[in-house]
Amino acid sequence: MYLAIRGRNAGSIQNVTDYCLRRVLIGLRRFEGRVGQVTVRLNDINGPRGGIDKRCPDLSRAIDLAVARAKRGVAREVRRLGRHPGMARRGRESPSIGHAD
Image (cartoon, rainbow, N blue to C red; front, side):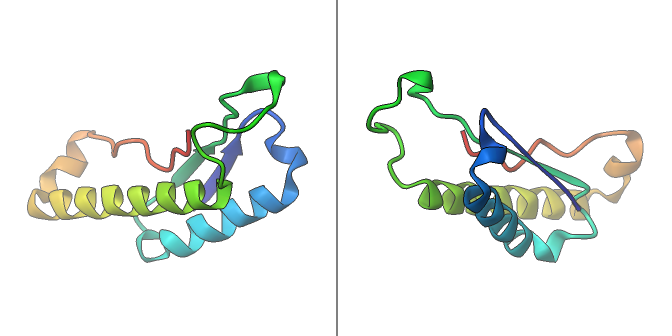
């Protein structure tokens, strides 16, 4: 599984990217053979102004919630494709997962 972590200054916050990596790999481990790529996007809604985060003051909680949501979405897609095995061969792609906006 390929994991890309995107976001302004995401690379400069090593402990956040490490936490994302661990949580996504653990959370989606059972789908490893079915998920080829996961992209995590980290955005600061305050932008360069800084200040107190109004939407999500706890980044680790936001990451955990996003991983849980992605896990449910992948499980739902796997169940759906399991009921209709021919759909995967007709060129349909899985929805994008793993967003932490």
